[in-house]
Length: 335
Image 1 (cartoon, rainbow, N blue to C red):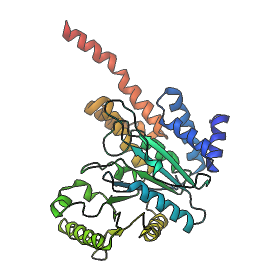
Image 2: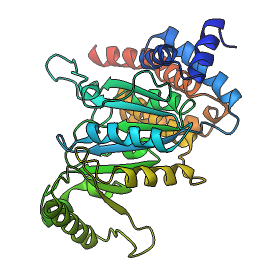
Image 3: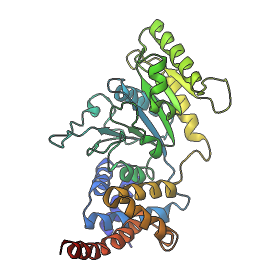
Image 4: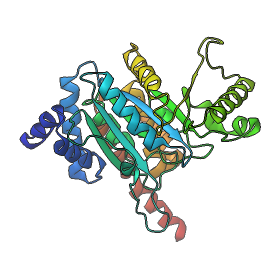
């Protein structure tokens, strides 16, 4: 059963009202016992309403600091809203948290000039909470909620280096944004992140000569590691040249995103995604011991539970029950 207050919030969020959406997101970002119970009610209610699962398509956009991800996302959203009537878009921008204070600037919204009054676009900033991988510790929770309300959910990662690839797990399609002349062949080949994207974007292509040079450099580098672009083979990937300043290539990128949304069966399984993040959470708290218990429990009773919250509560109760016995054993050893 869902409370009357939560049911009203979900109904208003279904009409894309911004305050109820923000209220629900805050609920999914909070880690109190009361919020966990409320999340379980909301997810059970949404799953009952959407028997085929959430319909939202998740687009992950990642890249180095200063590549122009925020400006590109702003122009991309405007192009999508103008070209696709009825399309609803949510943007979740993750900012790095300070190692010393723990706070985050949340400054990406200053670079995305979006129509605030338009209900079809929603923007939310989120701190990484010192989590590694390019996304925040609560990003998974927010994305699984937004997928029920929006046709397209865009995740903007923090500025990444060479190994932050967590967004690949969350996204149905991943885009890597780069700057012109971002490196030579060796730099491209040694970057583990180059194997993650489904699509490459060379942004800030304000000058044609630099844009063409960067395109051919990237294309030849990818070919050396057996990543093909254009029409050179099955599973080939695309490279787009864009400029938010000159509105170059934005329309072509928007058309490509729309083609990916319309592809049948192009969405990740929510069950697989929840299983991955449940393992990650157990490993963070209990390490390899917790993973071993989770694997054993998955084969017995965990699959009988429906929601992520039910599974999370069950496994943490099971692992927590073992702690008194461990404490007693440690006391015996200390004697």
